[in-house]
Image (cartoon, protein in one colour):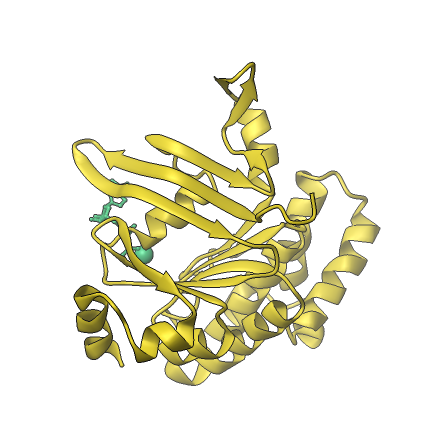
Length: 255
Ligand code: ADP
Ligand code: MG
């Protein structure tokens, strides 16, 4: 189905013990859409990405990626929990980039990029290396493929992390504050890579405090507070004329 949503969330709840971290999230993201999520610390942004990526299991609700119901198989109108292997397979529909780059320290940039394709997807090493070099070139690191993470700047490490996620050929990329751990002068190079990716038609959800970037690159802005989506819409419209007083209060602090 060509008009199928890339990501569809219906009634997502997440509890950590008694703590109700996500309180009924409904969200639809079209293919090729760049969705930016903003909101105060503790509002559930990371938890939402982790539920989409199935690092966390939702307490209630349904997550679909390109029509595939995550974590479950739906037969005869009933839900059947999937095996860990099937969940791993599904998890590859999404690629995640974290605030901390989490590269394997004992592997070169190229080694990091090809690890998933070779170990998980069983792609021949020569093919993976050639594709991996292309991806490193795409993030502006063609010349640094043989460097180890401790020989790279934070911005370069984060770009390797993006190439590594892309190497698994995900349908949707999830970015959780990808520039928050970077020195200010390194933020731009990472945002430029994300911008190129957006222009190439990649579907993505980006959690960020870079409001200017959200306005420039985002198609869809989501404001979260206390485990709910308080307001969503076109970034320009929402930033200029937020409807909710909670959105207004948040924006007045960060703009
Ligand atoms: P954000 O990314 O918007 O800052 P999070 O999704 O990280 O927010 O967290 C939302 C809330 O859920 C916070 O109150 C946080 O303390 C809580 N939380 C997140 N992960 C866990 C966990 N594994 N166990 C218990 N509480 C958690
Ligand atoms: Mg977070």
